[in-house]
Length: 431
Ligand code: AMP
Ligand code: GLY
Image 1 (spheres, rainbow, N blue to C red):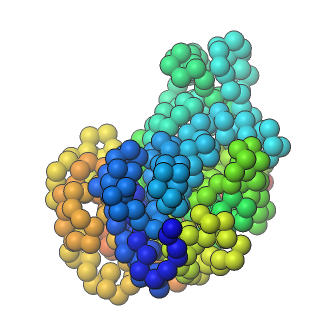
Image 2: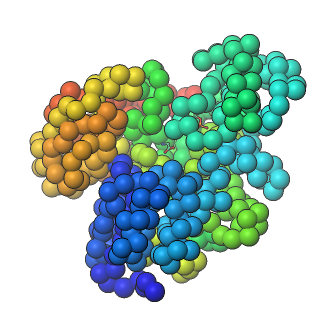
């Protein structure tokens, strides 16, 4: 039986900057854990690897192993606590229809106008009535299946896309197209107690000025007061209340509590906060922001989440700002070059001064080094930390510019100019 004791062994499942940020936070723990990364993220293969010498605790970065039932098997077969929900709880991310229906059934606010279609009856009429709409496949698509009217499709193309999804998946979600500013609220929970992280804004578009195709996220920021300049007090309270209510609804609906991180993707609109989607894990890159300033012991916090004792655990964050910029291969995301070298050696002084943290992602080297070969996706997250957003942005920008190789990054993330645009947009919507 494992216990929370000095020198405990902690396995980290994931091969991304988010999981590296989890690992770095664990490695700061006064418990001096022995951290270990399985060689794969496939649930079955991870289980086989961990079975030989089970760790005391497992933290999972990405959603796929959770949706495949990794937490269930770790806990039921090996008796190992897992920071990350069981498969039935991870459905909040794995099925967008189920997530919308859970909120509706439990009377939780935040759903946009939407309908779940399991056959095409009434489909075209609904699209026409909405005018501007969003069509969402039900399951995991890596953020790439959502199509927005005007941007990706007109009404007849929308109907065609929705019909194809009903045919392939048996279900499609259609909702009103919202106008506003997106933000993420990540909530650590043991299924009863919730601890909210600072709000984060991600940047999904590939290029400066929010242009170009959607990506996994090009970077993100937090500000020192843990809110965001375009989010008002009511918005923040509303988002927190929605996450709290969903944690309770999951326990009531499924008969057991959710352990891990519940990530709410929200949009601040002229009519309050609306829910875009739920994820069953930290965001990537959002994890790199909040974990870089986590003041509490992540090992103790995640242990408390799995043992349902979070009530006794303080979860606090430094009152500092963070800016994450992802360094990606040239051509990302449409035609990324693969196999190129990326060199972060010139960042050593910035990292040494504590102004910047580095988290490797899609590279083929061991984390901890300064050079690697890129494998085609987001390669390196550089996170600037500072007393103000300006300081954090300058540190991140300087770091990103110093990275060598055929790479690029978005220089506008966390800048005053971009922030000003967001604030103006919200002021216009609220007036
Ligand atoms: P999702 O996979 O649900 O996060 O959707 C991907 C992206 O599509 C989001 O980050 C939003 O930018 C956009 N999106 C999703 N739902 C809506 C909506 N109802 N209105 C406007 N944009 C949306
Ligand atoms: N940054 C968006 C996500 O992690 O889903």
